[in-house]
Length: 97
Image (cartoon, rainbow, N blue to C red; front, side):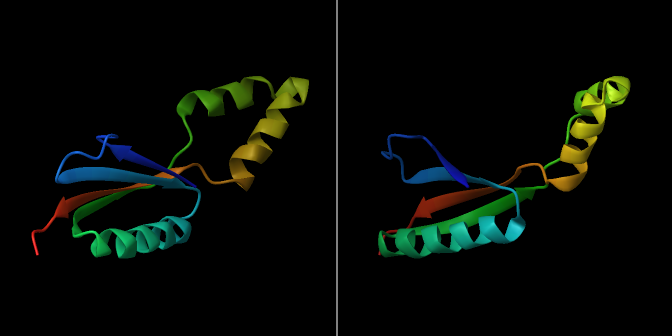
């Protein structure tokens, strides 16, 4: 699980955090923990957007073309067995209290 923040210096009353993970549940848990801490500092989530991860077309072509070398079968197993990284993006706004 990784978390990115824009702008990174933290000097703005509005900032965006991106939570990247393999499962939606893990990202929501990280968001919830983060939101509780940020609420104590006066920041509220203003909006959020979730994008499901997906494998690229090129990886499927590579796996198909290398099946005769057995490498393609291993790549297809990787594609079918694991989930790509999804992203939950949340905008936080500082509310004067």
